[in-house]
Length: 213
Image (cartoon, rainbow, N blue to C red; front, side, top):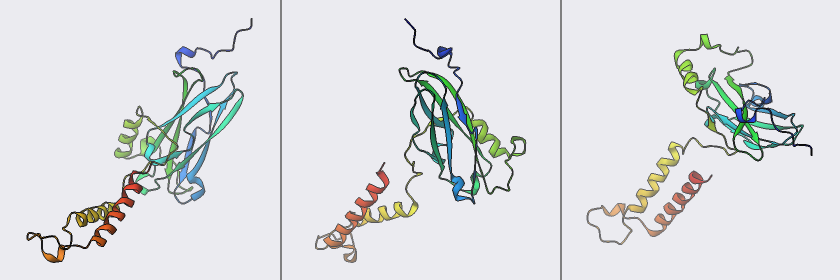
């Protein structure tokens, strides 16, 4: 009886991973370059599962960060840069693609892909020896720290305006209602029920926006 094809040296996690390209370069002044595609090939006779990890997951959105590739097929993984700021110019981030067998969770192999944001296509990629101390430290700390990516857009947190608006609504709700006897609070700070209803409604909307996955 013919045995099913097995990945070579599976237990050692050294299965070659075929990804193209192996370097992503985003340009701040080119909107089209903010969306790039990684192609993962599966030349083997068995299905492989993949997972995308990243050293800076808040800066990127990965569509379908986990999935499977059929034998002798390929899949496109879309990566969008979502934090185009000057402070990120020249910083080298890394993506790691881990693959495993469909029936197993243990990683069979992995491949790293670098990602760099430049101001424009005319700017040359910054070499490690020419980076400043801050960039070198960031890269050194990020070398062995990969975080699991998701297909969702990760938020950097609520804006200052939303926080202040929420606090304002909360203060309105805590103030006494018009008609309530309260000598410790001036009469002009006694608010009507309608005003408190509006504050409660706005606070509810802010809560939904901030906590929505």
